[in-house]
Length: 370
Image 1 (cartoon, one colour):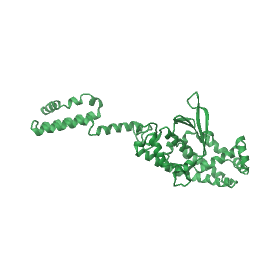
Image 2 (cartoon, helix red, strand yellow):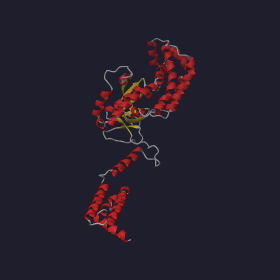
Image 3 (tube, one colour):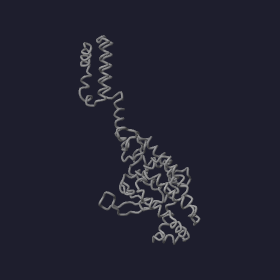
Image 4 (spheres, one colour):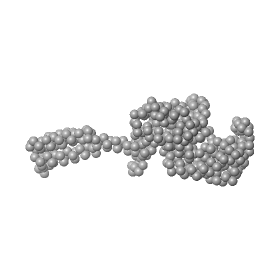
């Protein structure tokens, strides 16, 4: 697996992954949107690759598994090639890797490499000799455990994200820290019932000068290398929390997106599903929000209508208005309110003046004479 497949560069509140710069926490948030059905489709090919782990442990990989391993690798690529964040990589890059790594020559070399003592394997890793074998030893566990890791990640982190979603008051850096302490205990164990097991995922850290995509100047970045995808995704999400970034579920499409400030943003910027006008969730959400505000009883447009309706009723009760005139005035008032809701220019223009008692009375009498 190439350097950037299981590595992240952190700088200030951004992360660089696979040549893309984005707010820290983005890729960790994207995993929450992978459908359970997609993860279930990974089970079969991942299980095939897991069989290779038995051979690696026994220092003798069964060459008869090679064709099945090749098909399993292709299946994983096919399933994930358009699923973020895996879609950030070029599909051909992985296909070329499979052709080279899952070959008869590579597997034969792997069996030779497995016979070396640990010290000699370490030297090979440094010199680059038997590089494909060293790569396979790292790649096979990553791919073999992928469906299990993604499932565990979603179960644990979705519960955490749902808590943040339901408790708006904790959506601050301090609140994230307190909530984090509730979900992820400091003393982690390997029990599956304890979500802190992910904190044991190995990672190494370097501080390196790097030119980030889209920039010309060198920056000092924290580069983290991981031994699994789930460890990388977890680290990105947690690093995001450290700078005030957190997942939130879009109220329109139901997908998770990343918020980068304390505002209670409700909508993502993706396209709204089944919207005939091709609008984003944010556009649809803002429209819905305006409609909800307009439907509220205390909305200025409705308040004017309610006041006028009550006045007409009072005049009718006092006997200063006849029933026929009062009925026409109420119909006119309702019609004007509905127009004001539809047409902002009318609401901001003559609506209030036309809803005055005297103006409505004059219009009603004119209508009755026709």
